[in-house]
Length: 211
Image (cartoon, rainbow, N blue to C red; front, side, top):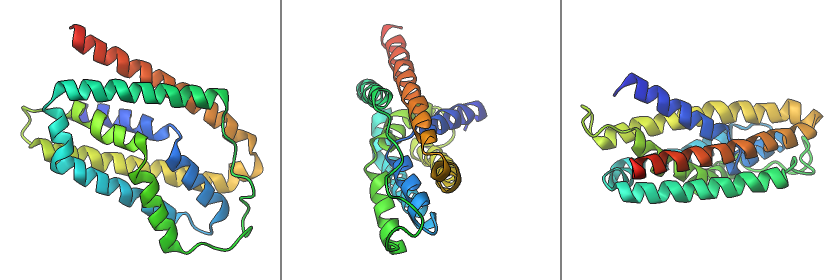
């Protein structure tokens, strides 16, 4: 695959991962209340790996072959992101109340793993990345088949998730426990980022439709 295309895709996916959503909320809660974030993080990654496999075997390739479907999904994604961004800017969430170390019974690791897989598997943001964004970075004329390209791009996304969420979960143990107000600042920044990304997606699709 084209190196510049891979870098562009990685930058866009990393930006999406950096926008807080359900994954962030879950991994932060795990960092605040659990002895280890590994089960929760592993569950999130398993959920995304399952989604990547589903996209690579057909869903993503089908979307890539139908530009009008891709345009519709992209515009819907932009509307959803704008809604989330505005909502966060109006009422930024705070840190989960009562989440202190040793503040409750330790949840079994396997349950945290299952919960994490459910959070990521049903996360609209992750589905937007895998179904809407990834096909835009595939090359029909490339040496690799579209499913292989989607699998590689999906694994890059999962790798970005692993890095970012590990830092977020560990950071929750230090920064957010000591300064809950930091979460509100992060939330406001993420809200603005979601709105900006929504505008970028709309402008990009309009340029394709009018070009």
